Image 1: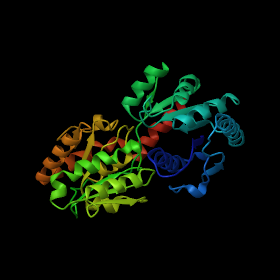
Image 2 (image 1 turned 180 degrees about the horizontal axis):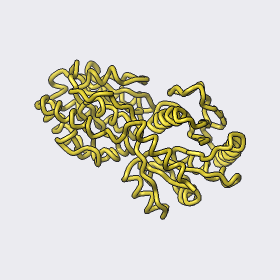
Image 3 (image 1 turned 90 degrees about the horizontal axis):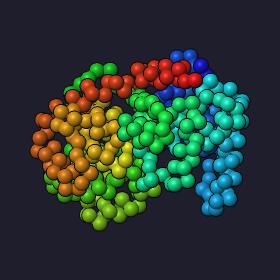
Image 4 (image 1 turned 45 degrees about the vertical axis):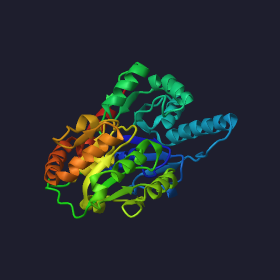
Length: 359
């Protein structure tokens, strides 16, 4: 099968990680795989196999006028069309709303199969009206629509009036399930430093918790536009010695070995890869009910901790975790058993079977 992925860039992010993982799995299966991005491959965060055919489409720029935006998007549509004409994929797989819209419009010129993939709950709160309107117009013309959370699947089916396929994220699982033995007094979180991830809520909750009073550290892995405001919040709260913004990391395994708890407090999500990887490693995970598919994966105090996105309630749950380290170990063990269905080879097989079936 000839498969082309399309995404704005291959910088750090959940959708980008999924593409990287699926690309490797498909190539091992014997497929011919191409990747098209608007950004240069010099900006890639994830490494790809040498066999991947790469198309750098260009056109990734911030526009300050409607006329310029229209011109740039028309140019992107044309370049997507030209790349597909050159590669001749059996299916084009696009990721994220804006790119999905452009992919559908580009394939109208060549009548190719296109699969659009949504990764987060994107609605009137976090997706501009123009793109919501274009999504409603273009998605019904796609060959298939996928989502990585049941929440997004239901939302899209209601909005678009078309079936949406739920497909899990692929993650790497340890060869053996072991009881996690943390090496440090560390709480860990991973994600882009953006409004979506709501790290200010996590930092404020930690500041008032028993973990903070007991001298624990909160480590946040990631980079983004909110770094300056988060650093100011940490300084204003007087917890610079205990809360560290570590920037990007190509592997969080070292930090997972140190962590006793992984916490995610996002305003919205699809299925967060970092939380799944933490669970796979046996690290107990606490997530707010706003974290997409985590509300269906986590069973409170059985395989993790699930809590409303409320500062006082998060702090209470943190206090319970701080006082019950042995219970946390049990949650981590159950959590590692709960994510087996996300194993990368198994999930890639499901993706490929789905792609073969697309008409």
